[in-house]
Length: 473
Image 1 (spheres, rainbow, N blue to C red):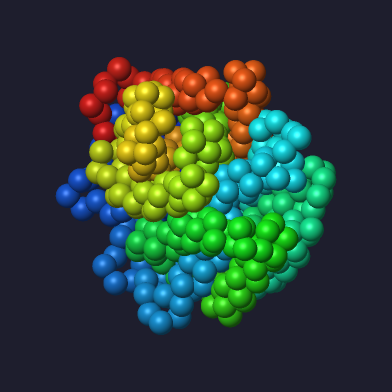
Image 2 (cartoon, rainbow, N blue to C red):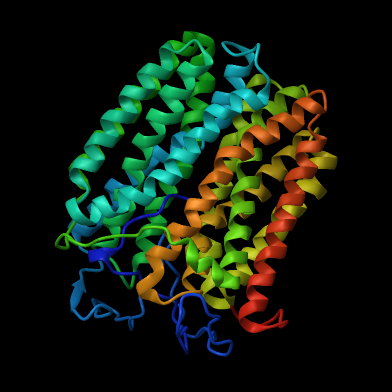
């Protein structure tokens, strides 16, 4: 799954991949040189999972940034730095863990409080939630640059705790939309963005490792929370089950508040505002379309997999358990493709993972999803493939622009992509309703959207390096 934009250290752009030659753009709207994208595979360093490293040489112990004319040494370790990583991990267990539990919420609500509504209508609760998380990060990042993480994380903690309490007493559709979709979405965005950005204050050469460790928190939360709710729902019902989950989230976030710190001075002129004029860059336009389709398709299986299991006659217990299986696989999908992307190119890896997602939907889920082994295999393969969105997407964007323009390009891309999160789940639900509750249309649609994403990403690569499928890019 892809995540909200973080903040850049002192208003600068992040590091680029280790390369023999770096991209040199004369104008934001012109194509970049087609002959300078060969990655040094002998000294490749795993790329960060959420931000792209800046155009700086790597040092083995400490790292000095000079991309903006100043020299800044990063600790690259030490007790304080790793405690910040631990704090970020805890914050992501709570924030992204809730995002990875959407299928559990969807399944319960469509069979209880909101059973009179179709899947697509209920899906608006969670599509609005993902939209707010992604879109909110565009503006929280600059706030982090100016004010640091402390107040943002504290407000996020209180927002998530309060919104989950309101979520537990909601009875009408609009209650659920406001409490979880809007309020909890904003709280999770306030937790996520500063957490990842704070890690970047302590690591640069090792930022990929540090951010990768922190990002596994979302997968861990996505394993624990659905299993916990599976046990709580039969015993306590909706209200107290959600309240207990809220207490757990608050306790985890409280610990994160004591650990997450920034290190660098405030950036007074921090900005990462979208600029739609840069869509004149054809490669960037095609990449944005590809990312839009990736996120559009991603949240359909993530939201409906538990409901699908129930519709095929699987037990309620197994329907809740299949989501943690998918999230466990995604933990590996966040780290390994990011490492491989540094060796064979981020666009190549993103396209390979899109192909794997197509195979998982059309060759596993569609023909074999009604069998236990088939559905488990789909969850593992799709979870691994979809996890790469987090590690690879920012790297792809950074290949298309000057490093000092990275924040503007990323913000512009995800301003558009966030709307995919808003409409993907309801459209999937409407397809399901139009087919009388049969999921084959949703599965085929998801596979075709992934195919469109693959085509867009490949054409973006063609714009940069020509019709050379084996070129590292």
